[in-house]
Image 1 (tube, rainbow, N blue to C red):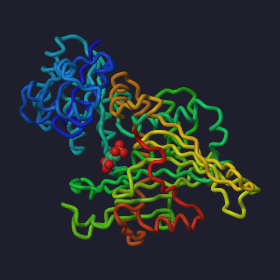
Image 2: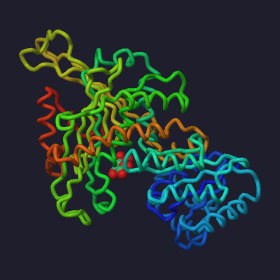
Image 3: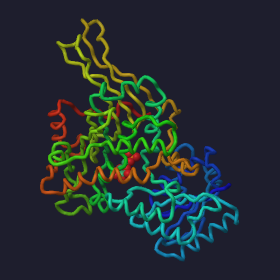
Image 4: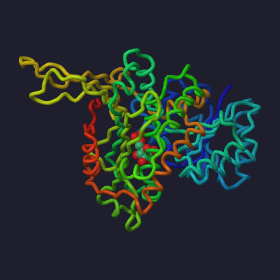
Length: 485
Ligand code: BG6
């Protein structure tokens, strides 16, 4: 059966920078499994040909070496445009007719991608339902919803309720592009396809876990969105909690969407709720100097551009092991790392006179270069049993010939194939909000911990280092441990 992908918000950035290049790359790799038509929908008036040529430049830019004119021409013949306003029911009726027309009345699967302003998600879904576009008697009907999914638990819950009036849960694909990153999926392989890591992946051997998503970029011209979101909503509720779930989850009985997500959800259930003094003791807030001068930021804004949290999973595997999560804009470099810090050896035989060994560390580098580094102690040659830290590197890029697919390729393909393992389920999204909401509320209360300032280009506020120091630990402040090629 030939499928159709319909992209709402077709004139937006995401379509040209991510979706079309990802679809083109899949096409080039002969993986665009049965997708024969891609239809862009937005309010602008374009002819099909105009829409196609408006996409060419960014497709060339973002598909890298896969791009060539001949293939683009072939691919773009499958791309159509249909003007439509999400607020206008008659536009959905005309869209339904247009789809029937290009599908020539043949049964076809349809994947609707909502890449519009989040305020329009609910209305778009209602309109799809009202125009009969959710009816899956003639092929699958699925909907992909971009982040942010709600702005807190109440709005996420209301959005889930509305969507469930039109689509069943198995038709809904809530995207978190971090799950499409190859290295994130590699954590499943590392943990569950090897026998050497799992036995030590627990409170008996692990001292703590650090998950860092550092970005060099500052907010630039995104103040309109960012100032009301802040870093907890923008990065923690979704991407960082996803990384934590995959790091902390139990092995599922099968690699299957329902079972994988069940295990992830159990991690969220186990995260200890912060109360009272915990908010001050276990969180650090920061804002980079100069944020208040960014275009569109209201005077005196208290929005965080940096946050560090200490969370605990109260379960058998992780009881007592802190998970330090942190993220910031305007940091010293762009790097996403998961650091499993193992405990110190029980009895130190060597190196007492020089330094105590740090303990083994496994660094999973999600980006920019993708790979894994293991830190372990070795003897300094020609010394009297002095030790130093050495490393073993695995470079994922090299293993894939330097051609790592962008996250959207994987996620679009999975949605076409009907595999929801790498998408967030309704309960997952709501539980994640349930963890973030109380922290946000505490940060907006008179008892909020202070908002520390930091210089762009640093690793966040110095107070975050002191905070770790007070716990006799330190951040792994190393810019990519593996470099990109
Ligand atoms: C987005 C956030 O979801 O993720 C951005 O809204 C952030 O603020 C981006 O910059 C980071 O994504 P990546 O893939 O570049 O790490």
